[in-house]
Length: 337
Ligand code: AMP
Ligand code: MG
Image 1: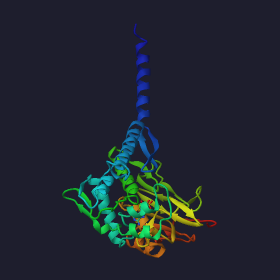
Image 2 (image 1 turned 135 degrees about the vertical axis):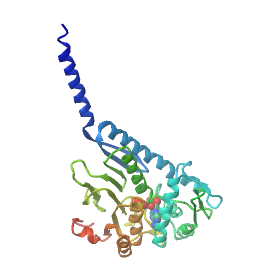
Image 3 (image 1 turned 180 degrees about the horizontal axis):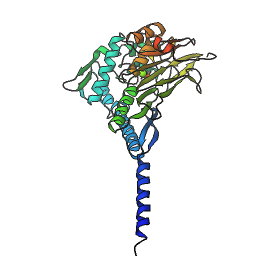
Image 4 (image 1 turned 45 degrees about the vertical axis):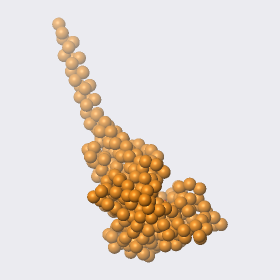
């Protein structure tokens, strides 16, 4: 009598099984956004539901870190530390203590060529708003307030203190890479085994692509906007590029860009871009900027000593690479500039 029941039940079970198996299939979920004043991109491979949730969680992490480190958000750790410069230590998040500690380590290692208290100079040049050429007097006045030795980190009390009034903490050279590394760990904690987080010129990769191929990361050509310098293949790691083309203005035929040399108060000269490859996420971003400030020779030696793979391009279009890359990476600058 109920003979129809068996085929219907079978069809239903088959449909459910197919739907279930489809939900387990590995897909690529990718989302972009604008955070930390740059384009961000998060990719995760996995079952649709899990990959989607992981991408959302990674983007939420980036937004949270922006809330801690954005100098223009009055409630951010950085804004509160700056407002209390010369007055009082300020309680901050553990992530802020960690990123500032990492920045100070690079500052010490570069004898202050990299300096996270570069803020007054960045403001004098107007990078982040209306850029302009400051007078020598303005540059000199700002430079007296740039001194990483006057940052007091208290890990027990979890406080930061800028010892002199007018000092300005600026994490612009390290925040994006550190955030990318932290967002990558969010993907990992969500059970993702293959993914990628990009925050501007900072890329953090997780695992290997499901097809077994390494990640391909295109490196921007410093003088041709629509072109890349090379494509790097890597498994899990970090790639970071600092360049004079990211934020700049031209005045009487001279390019003035946003990476400043604290020793001169002027944009660092000699390099057009520095790309580093490393497996330490708290360093890639800062190291690229640090080497950029140090210049072609000192910058190269600095990266080589730290065991970091690197590609440096000078403003004259000459390319140098650490020996480990020299054999396997093709770089073509083409007609220059
Ligand atoms: P990046 O794009 O990572 O090379 O970082 C550039 C940003 O870092 C600038 O926009 C400034 O906010 C900041 N910055 C500029 N010069 C320096 C420097 N010498 N040391 C540390 N941070 C810097
Ligand atoms: Mg950097």
